[in-house]
Length: 175
Ligand SMILES: [Zn+2]
Ligand SMILES: [Zn+2]
Ligand SMILES: [Zn+2]
Image 1: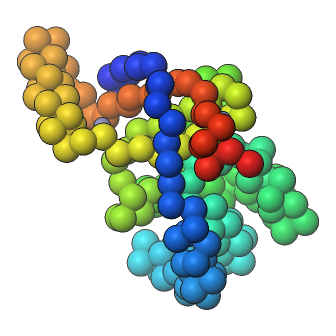
Image 2 (image 1 turned 90 degrees about the horizontal axis):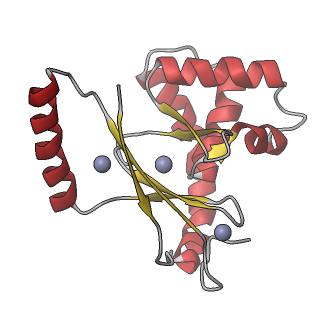
């Protein structure tokens, strides 16, 4: 069982988009080597569909619905292949799958540099934004989880905290 907490999102989120653009040029050259390395590190064979899907996810760098991912990969990967590759990535524990408030399936890579975090969901544009909570908050929550485990004689394996709201005019995530 997962512990799910729901809060209301009220503040806009800013991301240094200009820095991202500057970094992107160099980043593109790294993506291909990276995807091969990730597959090799997890001891699975390096196949073309796996490379294509992994490269797309590395480039997107944020959560994406399977439908949007399929649209981005059109002509490159068939739907059935995409599902098969996503399952392969789940099997080696580098893909996280969850649902939007309107029940669309979302996937994102969970690599070492981007592990435990939470999500903001925008009900206007559908954007899903990764957000890390303060360490003190996570630690406090872990204490609370331990208390609940004891009280219910239960092993809690994970928790989710999802924030729902709308972006503002200033939100650079909006396209
Ligand atoms: Zn929005
Ligand atoms: Zn995420
Ligand atoms: Zn957390």
